[in-house]
Image (cartoon, rainbow, N blue to C red; front, side):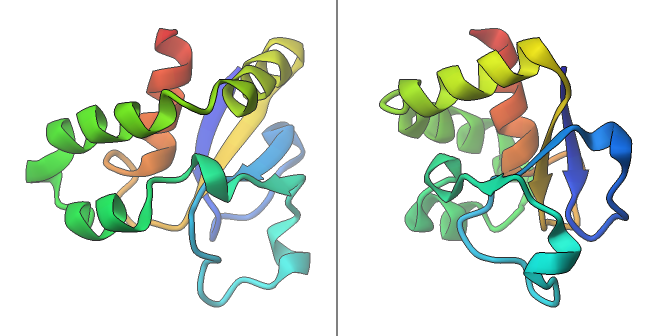
Length: 114
């Protein structure tokens, strides 16, 4: 099972594997407080795409298309996430305020759609 969660939310035992999928480290969060299993910054959108999107919901569909194209070459990392999700809960962590239009939601959709 794959979940998404804001990294600023309190960690929970139900989170399973906690994986940060942002390119930049979230402001105001210490590594101790984050309780990460790992940081997959290579699965985050590239800097150019991230800046272009700017969490603008009007750009969401185009963001999804461009982000999918970036993910195409990352099968090894994606296969690892799929395998882990098949064995237990994986929580993709993100820093964005928008809980519906962010890269963790897009990544979850991509993984579940494959």
